[in-house]
Length: 156
Image (cartoon, rainbow, N blue to C red):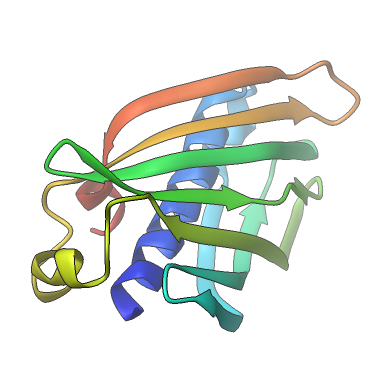
């Protein structure tokens, strides 16, 4: 279960990092995640959990709305989990902690037992496909899609 929580945490960090590099404003690339913690984690079944991440974010850029966060996590090319998160609004020129509710569910045909090799190893072989909507405050925004992201790149 801890590994699923770790995957959810990495997934959300990846979403924020991708948003920061994809909105097209020069200061956006200077957004930094300063801390990550959990407010709470609630297993909702043997195949899913809900959590609220506490994300410390230093945003020197204009306000950014990130919404419609969804994606999948795969291991060795096989989809293992679906991750969704509620939207988050980064306040302009701020350094604060944001709450980000998210959910992780195992896909059909995947059990916790079949994930034991992942629990025992590193994040190597884990990839994510991510779709989100990002917009500079008062702007139209855009849908962003990122495929085959190596989760190991977000854990270093």
